[in-house]
Length: 111
Image (cartoon, rainbow, N blue to C red):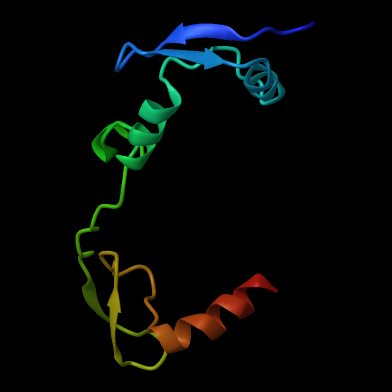
């Protein structure tokens, strides 16, 4: 199928731009079926500004956000008896291991 250049209008600035046959072939090779709705300069500006993605509370990425510190709990290591800081609420019916004792415990449980 032979493609020809298309004249489109930008949804942001209303300027006319050309969607070339080469660009159309590129889009098609990537499985993209819709023509661009923004001119190259508005696309570049939108990309530079973060893409206008939804905020992270809606489940979509949109930029770096500082993570809140994780709550840590103090427990006694079941192996060495030292104090351990863990990111979960320890339970009495489950052993808790410190960082040093957990690694050997983890390897031996796999075999």
